[in-house]
Length: 119
Length: 108
Picture 1 (cartoon, chains in turn red, orange):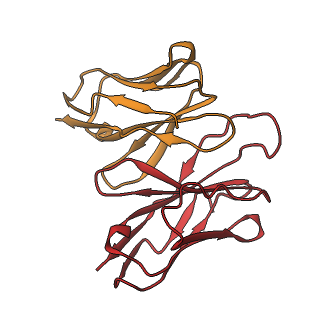
Picture 2 (cartoon, chains in turn brown, red; picture 1 turned 45 degrees about the horizontal axis):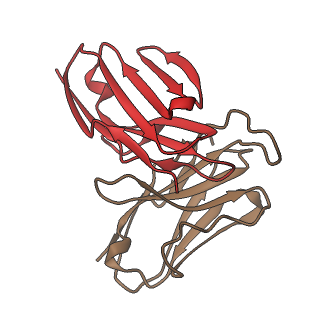
């Protein structure tokens, strides 16, 4: 597709359930990011994938959060045993930054997000 | 980690007015981007501008990397400019750190 695609657009779940959020980046983009935005707040970094390198997981708030990226393309963010404080919009972004050396022009392109509500 | 401060936090304009949004950052950066989040939550990349000046229609941005700030100029504002403007920066080869944003409301 032309842009970053996320699904589902909305998810309501009960406290304690597991959820999976999906991100399909722009074709050919090597870098993929997950951010979280709570109501009225800025963006909180969660995890970053670049090519086949080990992901930067430094932003994951707890071990209930995990993410994987299969085949260097689609990514899934999993939240286990959801809590009410996990309620937020989860945003995925991709960019075409170079894999090695250099920097190049690598603007970030965001999907429309998944709004997660934990009841 | 790096600190990103945006000002003002809120701004109300009459349609047609001009405005300047500021982004200060606490350390040297190699990447700076401006984003607009519309009232429906969609985030749009406005500028990739680690240094220098760029213009795109009624919007322009200037980053003075040596003084650790960037400015976003909106001229002849329109109601469709309403939303939140975020500045995001990157050190080294990691990920973008976002400021808390400036919420802009343009009234007709």
